[in-house]
Length: 196
Image 1 (tube, rainbow, N blue to C red):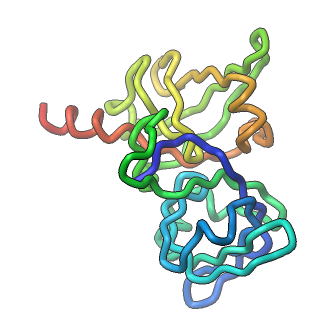
Image 2 (cartoon, rainbow, N blue to C red; image 1 turned 90 degrees about the vertical axis):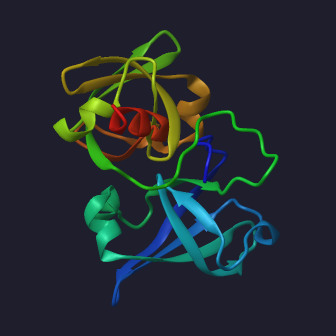
Image 3 (tube, rainbow, N blue to C red; image 1 turned 60 degrees about the vertical axis):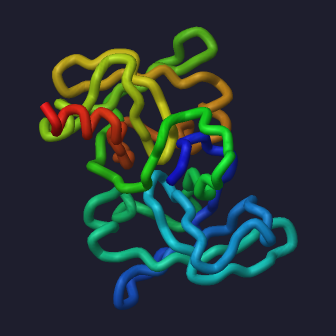
């Protein structure tokens, strides 16, 4: 489980199809803080570390990625050099500044526009019809693993306000109109909706 507060990043060094797929990232995570078998959220996808290697100023981590994960996320568009948002799993007692993020991507969404509003940015994403019932104005959502609040929703377009800190520290500033992001609805919204 994760909080959606992104403190680290990973640069894609390899993404190769073997029997499944192998993803290799150079990260700013400390070598001693990662264990083989640890769960790390990569762009909103919970993955398990299969190996790690100490580099001069980075830690190289490797993950196995299933075909199912690639087909359900924006991983089928990953390129060498891409920056991914990464977050280590929560430990008991950790502060939860965002909301509970499980790393189980519900769907992808497409960036349809962004503009600067004061020092922040307004981003609009088109979501699929099947997710609309789980999304509410001022509710929480995870975009590429980032815990965000929905400013507004009109039909199938959600509007999010990105503060400068989040804009700089995540890969949102790398997105272009037409790019696809990983989206996870708030688990509380899912349970409440399914029980009514």
